[in-house]
Image (cartoon, rainbow over the protein chains, first blue to last red):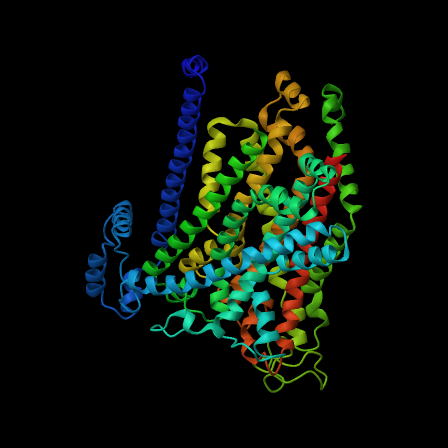
Length: 337
Length: 292
């Protein structure tokens, strides 16, 4: 290290830049390695939590009346007689190769079921995210500018309540308002036939997407508001105001870019929130995504399907939280430096 | 006790600090409202069944009868009295949610303080372990285990606690690290007070504010997760009345008898909003005192 610093001071900025780049790479590389290790541990936890628990998978497949000989055959086929760690290695290698096993209830490959369901879930999530981000930005900025005025107080109160209630409560209230009791504009269930693309049924998507959007906006716009108030109170904005720049110019040219920095990690957190919320929302609207698949497979004790869905949701949730962590860390450093 | 105080004068101070934090918290209107909502909802959930006019599991009239005829909120999908079921439907939530919140904050805070104080490999291992748990959204953790072990209240509390611990540990670790560098901690260290005592007597009293905020946040989450599990059908099993389950059971009658769904929803909202008010009011109190 000391050698590097000495060299860089001798040869000027070029070396210093390279050294700092090397350090940044090393830091990010270390973080990435840490992330992969954590994911590995997550997969171990999922496998052992489900596979090592009491209950005989062979009995689930064949039913209670199966003869011991047939049970033995099925156990042999599924590799259930192998030691647990070997079962885990086989499972993980299978996952990495794209062989996710077969469903215990209908024998269809898990990967086939999940590609279909994953497409539906992603449609829901991406749609919600794309609509939510600009709304949250506008609402947050407006609330920040009207700080402590009536609109801001109303916003703070409403978003506090929405943030507190579970997703299914929010969704049920929306169904009561727009699907059944008060108005009957949108269908209260979002059943998508397996052969159809979800966007062929735009009316059915409205309520589930709206539930996700309202929850996400209530969360995200508060972060926007706080970060915007911080920036507007900072010295350089006050300098700009003293210089007599127009409010609009200050807002768009000076305040917004800086206020947006903490929003990148916040958006990843919202993506994580969407993933966590899908299970309940999809169940509420009978929307055929991976969340509903999980609820169904838990009822059937369909282990391969449960393991696969939990692994997908946990990995995605982890990755988004990880990105949020990474950016919020570097953002803070950037502001200090 | 008095002997110890003479020997270690610094240890007296934390007691005073703690009571000051509490009065400061109670001076916030939001916190008072939050505590009020949580207490009223919990009391209603525990003692409500005494006030219930009918047995919550007995069908007494036609399904989805509208309010009237002596039924304040009408009947549900099996013709049972909604009002009686709402009054008796919070019992499990009323003890499971606060218990999960207290346990998760207790364990999480301990992990966070130990991590912050010892740093090094202890910190690394504990935090990596927290990262692994953090990869599971609360509901997912519960569903994964319930799929194999079947629903039971004790198991659910354990799973909710497991899901909530890592968040608490991270927050408390962050709050405790600056305190570990303060003079009185360094002084106590140099006198040779063992780490366990030092954490309990020097660090803990100085993080009571974030602890109270965490208690509110985790209560809100615990109610949310537990109600959601019931709603999905893997929590409290019918015919036992339960708010989350009632929402799910009576959804099909939303058009004709909305009260069977809205009444339990109102109770869940009161409970979670109470928790969030405690958390938000508390966070504001902290921001105000730190700003001074």
